[in-house]
Image (cartoon, rainbow, N blue to C red; front, side, top):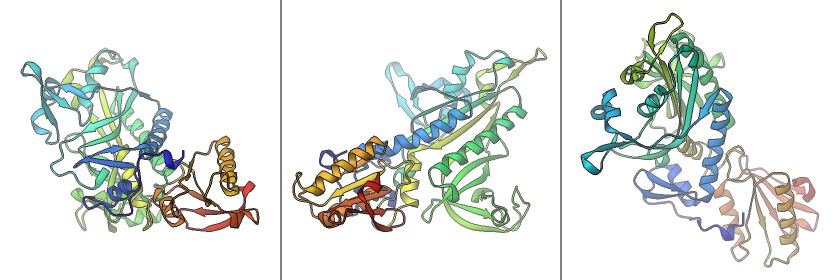
Length: 417
């Protein structure tokens, strides 16, 4: 990608209306654009990051047997009345429509997936199975804040599993737990991710959140010190924590450390709450009709983009892990014209990297100052920046910077590919 062709431009100035670090950096870098409070549009580079996160999640969901679908964003009022959530779910967008009807703009999809599945399940032999989607969700947050960490419109992966017994749900629940940790590890967030015990609400005794520790996190969690010593990252959500009483579910210990975090995902054992409401039943091996047992598992795709922007940035800008970066290498030729030797060599380098499957951003804005172009490279936050200049080429070298460590080394041109 040539930077001169990218319509989104960078800004040196912090955004006066930015509600968080992630919003400020992502807007300044031209990755997102604010539409209104809690609603953002994703520009070319930001969309690349979002798609890379999607792909990691998709691969891990496919690996545990998830079948990808795409459900409707709208649903009828009577679906929500069946579950009792039309009046009680405070974040639900309720939309008036023609002929005095009303629809919900879905914040989650239990009310949609359950009647879908009811069309196809009638026997224990039809289960277990799991279906997931990656889709935009809508929540009428009273006060949208924290940039893309908490918005009124966001991209989410939601997986739903269907079982003939509680034991089978328990088995699959552990499989999903492991898959979620792989997602965060692949994104470079593994050491910051804590499996956090939270209230199960009306579903079960506990649910589990995946909290990413962040200095500016909106949640308070209590990390189990004993579990950490055993190499396990376990925490308790503030809402179910009682000092001196709460014990670590893994070790039984009572030593905890208070931290701030942001929820990147959560998983619930739904039991028969939704299957009972919709009459989703099956005939068991004993010939008796029984309610299907369900689980649900969510990951905030766009929220993860914001979390990485918060967790891995520095004073100069974004610092993307290679797995989700919009490109791998940022090439900056230092020259005045396109027939200059540095520009020609930079283009040859770009071609060689592309041939190896490495995506690049090529800064062909030769009229810009060197300082501003290098500042943009830091703001974009690609894993590697390569500067090609007449000075370094005189010795057959280029300047290579590791964005994460800040280390700058001279390398032979042919070693960069």
